[in-house]
Image 1 (tube, rainbow, N blue to C red):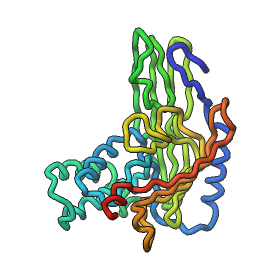
Image 2 (spheres, helix red, strand yellow):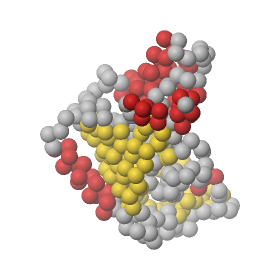
Image 3 (spheres, rainbow, N blue to C red):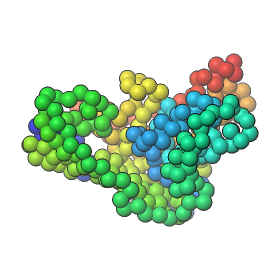
Image 4 (cartoon, helix red, strand yellow):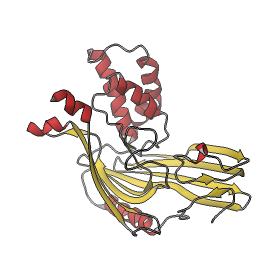
Length: 288
């Protein structure tokens, strides 16, 4: 639906064909007798403030195994980085940082206590977060339309509301739903801003559904992926956390390979595939 006050140029109300296929594939995979890694959770949304806190710890050298240039990553991965920061401080692996205490405290409350090794195997949060906002501008706004998952506001008044729900089952699968309601002068529309199921086994993570990705360290102008466009309907396979190859290949630094099959806009090919691997260039230079 095209609204005078809200535009979603490539909006696909509800779940598209790729998303439905992906979700059905995930349900089938859950039923297979595979060995779970015992590490499964939903991703941290790209606008989660925890990324900023973890980035502060990374800058101070407290999370040597972090790779924040590829987002999102799971909440379990975020909890692992918080524990790593604590261990680095305790062992003197990095210079003392006075601001680390409050940051680690916030992250432990939001991540470690909920998604640490002692977290529940199964859980359900039907209303994890609720957001409500009103936008008004006498001319087409600019900043509200940047990195907003493809939602574009025109001049006038508009109402936006969304909520998120998540759950996990037996440390084998996790799901995330983020429905969104938009209303303006021209009418209203409801769609799924994000909806996926996550599986993890043997150090790999499989996501099937609709979600955003961000590749690159900058706030704007990233080369490959941002959340400026609508989230992709995709099937994505990646590692649960960055890792280092053995032998001489260790000079490549930390790696986090990712491969995904996604549905693109109508004016492009119906399916797109991208294969990528991101390395920590700074560590490669330091080891040279």
